[in-house]
Image (cartoon, rainbow, N blue to C red; front, side, top):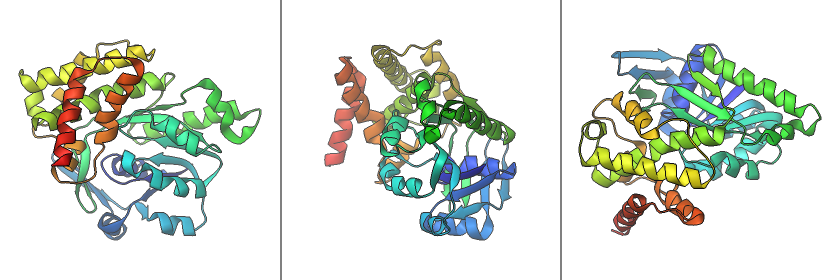
Length: 322
C-alpha cells in the first residue's frame, strides 16, 4: 500500500524512517529546511538508548509537489500538531481515493472524530502513538527511548461500512486495517489494531496531557517526576482527574493508569521534556489548548471537578497574557 505521512517530526518522521527501512512505500510530507535536508542527505535517527545513529534515504516532498503529481494515497498517517490539522484537510481530500484510510496520530484526544466530519468520503480512524523523539536539526531526529507503539482503530463498528459505500465495505475495511497493522509490525513498530480505540486513545492521553501540564506548570523534567516529590504528586493527581473524566464519559480502564504511566516515565532519560513544554518555553505555537484547556472544557460538559487542571489552566492563561 502507498503510505503518505504528513509531518516528519518525532512522530511521523520516526514512523517513516522505520517503515521505509522495512521496504514499505512511504512518502514523508515536510517543509522548509527539514524537507530540503531529507531530500539531499536522507533522514538520520540518533538512538539515545544505544548511542547509535542510523541514516537512510527517504521519500520526502512538500504538499504542493506531491499534489501536483496527481497520485493518490492508500493510507494517510496524519502526524502534525493539532493546531496544524485544519491546514492539512484540503491536501488529504485531494490525495485520497474512495478506499483511502486516514489514521490521525496526534496527542490530542478526539482528533479522529473531528477529522471524520471534515472528510466524510473516506474512513478516518482514531489513533495514538507511544514514542519519545524530536527533531534535533534539519534531517536529524533524536529518539530518546526504544518504545514505539501505535494504537489505531474505528470508533464504532458502523464506521467500517462507510468505506467505498459498498455492501462489502465493512469487510474490505477490516482487511485493510489488518494490513496496516501488519505493515507496522513488519517495520519493527508495535502496531495494534484496537477493538476499543476510545479507551486506548484516552489511555495515551492520560499520560501525555498530565506530563505536559505538570512539566510546564513546575518547569520540571523527567527526572523530577521519577523521584518522589511535588512534580510526581502533581502528575499522579492529573492522571486521576483524567480517569474521573473518562468514567463520566462511560469509559473504564482495565489497569491502574497511575502505575502504568509512572512505569512509562521511568524509562525516559532524566533530561527529557515534552514537546508542549519546549514549544511554550521557546515562544512557539503549542498544543496547550488541546492538552490542557480542552480537559477543563470537557470536565464542565460532563460535570466533573478537575481542580488541578483548572489551576494549571489559570496559570497558563496568565502566562499567555504576559
